Every structure is written in structure tokens, then in C-alpha cells.
Image 1: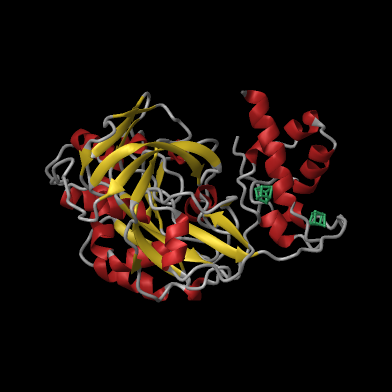
Image 2: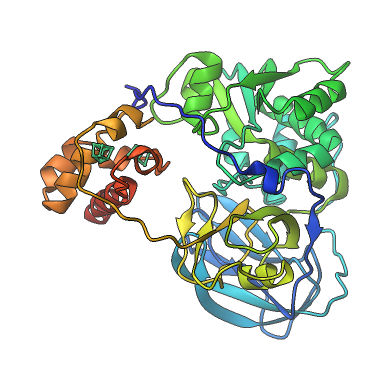
Length: 430
Ligand code: SF4
Ligand code: SF4
């Protein structure tokens, strides 16, 4: 049974104009970079270098090798100086490998480029795995896992929707790397065994749509699909339903579909062409809490505080730092978390006093939830510590989109109550 039953999609004020037409700002690493030793919440990572070892940009420094293979690479040249535990963008303190940057950015190719047209499908899957390609849209899921054993896949969906307010990093990355987008999607199409790839872009993005369509002239099997400018259109379930009018239980592959972010396809193409993994990332730093909102291109492992300083600092003494967009991102209590291969934004908002009033029982949050939940009832159950009701109301299915808070006329942080209920269920399972 599909859990996706909510009808809700909402147009949100995008604030995208703060950054979407400005050039990407290059930010160099400072004296150190900090490579997080974590993959999909697993810290089962084998470190392949020791203190004092010299590394280059691209040196493989660690590897996850349990049921998934995920290599980690250095983003600078210099020396390994040890490990340090610091706050990560997933809101957990985690061990990071610290590398002292010599500022030279000498490169080492960790794998050879590949001719994806000549390579067999299996060779290409192995290439993707060894290149460490992960979901660049925020998830960090090892991408090769989706292509290992495709069964009856008919459609590959490339998600270029970017529906969260403030974030324009994908928009800029795609605009600047159209040829790599096409190359990456062609290679993914071969991997997927699907007949067609659909690149989904929001319909108001006319300029981008025209650019991608122009690049696809003469390319068979890849088309652009325009989707409405509503939130959360970039959520996998919403997007799949919008395009295929089908719902699924756990994974899109159940209904013959694979979904990947457009920037993941670009990273894959770069690895194919250059033999280099994701060592640098483009992220949006935006919001009314930063002096100069911008898209930045920055080596993996640079601290948020350093990037904010390079952009002129905070616009207020009291700001809220969100790893990700304002709707789905996580509020992080300090600015020491670092750039990862999968993060796409840091939203910085001035802290505002919110005068909330009691629930009006208007039911808007219930009508809005795209996961078909009853957020106000989950909040009540969470406050009453009523575990049975939390289970019955399926709080674990919340996708943390934040819409229930967004629409609440009483200005209650309904989503936070649901998140707490979800965490109670997660802790119970452990
Ligand atoms: S945050 Fe969770 S409960 Fe609230 S609208 Fe989104 S999915 Fe529904
Ligand atoms: S939207 Fe706000 S006021 Fe309305 S029912 Fe939900 S929690 Fe109550």
C-alpha cells in the first residue's frame, strides 16, 4: 500500500532572486579541511591513511565497505593531521578526518576516465561505485545501489526541480554544466535500462528549460518535462506521482522508475570525463541572516563559519543556521559543520520572535500534509506521551517538509512536534 495519500502541494515564496542570476563565488579552503567519516548514518568507515601521510586532491583516504561501498577522497593537497569530533549537518557530533591544506591543490586521479558508450553496464556500475558518486540533492545515498540490479525499469527521472525556498545551487550548476548534464543522463540511462529519461524542471524556469532543450536536440530518449511550481514537487513521491500518476510503497523501482538528482548526473559525468570524484561542491548560502547571499563553489570539508566569513559575515547577531533549505533542513546549533559531497545549501535567517497562540482547530495542517498525516493530532499525542496513538497516526511517515508549520495561522511549530514524535518511535525501535 502506498503511504502517500496527501493531496497537498503549495506555491511558496521562493526568495530565489537573492542568488539565482549571480555568478558562483569560488571559496578556497582555509588551513584545514575536515572530511566527515559517515555514510548514510553509518560510521563503519575504514580510514586508509595515517597521521603525517601526504595526500593530494583526489587521494582515497577512507572507505565504507559493509553492504555498501563508499570511498572518501581528500579535497585538498597536504598532510593528514588526525581526527576530530565536530557537529555534522545531520545534527550529530561525528568524527572527521582532519587534513592540513598546503594551498597547492595538487591532484591525483584516483581512477581512470571511462568511455561509457563502450563500457558494459556492469563496468559502468563498478565505475560509479568506485568514483563514490552519491545523491547530491541532500541525501548522500550511494547512487550505484539504484543501478546494480534494475528490474523492469521503464523511466529514469532526473530531478531538477529544486522546490525549497532560497536554494538555487542546482539551477546554477545545471546552467553552467549543461553538456555534463546530458552526458551524465545518457550514462545513467544506459545503467537504468529504461527507454526514456525525463528531466523534470519547474515550468517558470523558462530560460533553463530552453537551454536544456537546445542541448538535447538530436539526442534520443531524453526529454524535458515541465512540472508546476509548488512545494514539495521535488520530493520523490510527489514528483513520481506528478509524472507517472503512480504511487509506490518503499522505492520508485517498484513501479518501474529510478529517480536521481540532476547534480548527481553532472557529478557522474565529471567523473566519467576526468577521472575525478566529488571533491568540490556548489551550495547556496542565502537568507536574510547573511550579508551577501551567494552560490559558492567550495572544497568538501570546509567549515560553514569560514564560508560565511568570506561572504562578509552574518547580517545579525542572532541568526538561525539551517543545513539545507528552510522547510526540510536541520537547524544546527553552531557554524562548525562542514561542506559534504551531498549538501546543497545553508539557509541563514534572522531570529524572529514568534508570538504563537493556541491551536484554532482549523485543520489546515491536516489538509496540507503531503504524507497524508494528521499533524495536529500527532502533536497532541506527543504532548500527552501517548505512544499508542503516535504509532496509530504513523508519525514515522513524516517527511519533515515543514508545511504544517508554514500554514498554521496560530504560528505553532507543528512540524517540530511531529519530528519529536517521530524520534520517539525511532528510539523505541533501537
Ligand atoms: S512536516 Fe511532516 S507532518 Fe508536517 S506537513 Fe510535512 S510531512 Fe506532514
Ligand atoms: S494549522 Fe495550526 S491552528 Fe490549525 S489545526 Fe493545525 S495546529 Fe491547529
